[in-house]
Image 1 (spheres, rainbow, N blue to C red):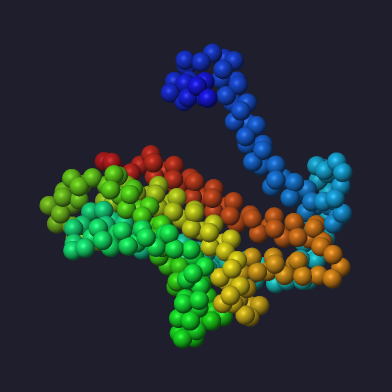
Image 2 (cartoon, helix red, strand yellow; image 1 turned 120 degrees about the vertical axis):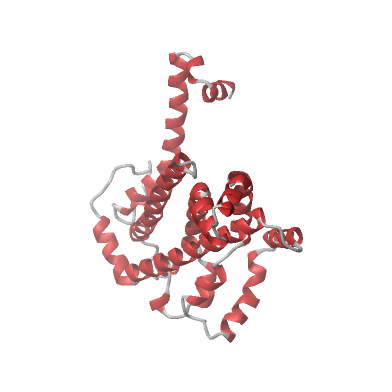
Length: 287
């Protein structure tokens, strides 16, 4: 551990062997992290008995499209994929926007009961999500939103973690001097927020977007509660349908569907990761 810390501080302080050892550790960690995903793809490209192979099968097969064809026969996979993409995108956009606004207000404005309201927001993080299912379901039923995307999007448009995350980041990243300079130049509240604060806090927004998109994409319980029609099913419910069979579990089919359902997450992660790096290197310090 001391060697790794020394390398982080100054790589030139270590010799060639130390650097090689450091990169070997990184490579081994990456391989351990990637292996489950690779093995899932191996099972997806072989027949359903590959999962029981001893020793574990590590070579790719040629059955992926055959397995995926059975997925399309049992579930409306691409429709469910589109539904999840739509719901996750709408929720992520709204969460990033509204939580950034709320975090900015808590960080840079003074108003009555500011601290009490913020502590109340933080306190909601300690309430288990399952406790809110019943009252939220009753509200959705009274609004006639059951079995609609509105029941998935509207209750998730803002969350306490997002407000807390953005408030903490804005408090340290957005300097009061920048805001005062914007006011002197005649900028309004929203213009200052959009032109001065947003470029500085892009990394935090990107991180919040990644976390929220993954959370909504992987959510299974709440869509299962409020969605009734197959046309509205999200990808997680569609994957669950693959487990309901009388002929035993077809792991090749399940893994091919799971692998395909994971690809959008990887794409979003890569896109947002590049945005994080761009935000870190640009910020509001522009000529």
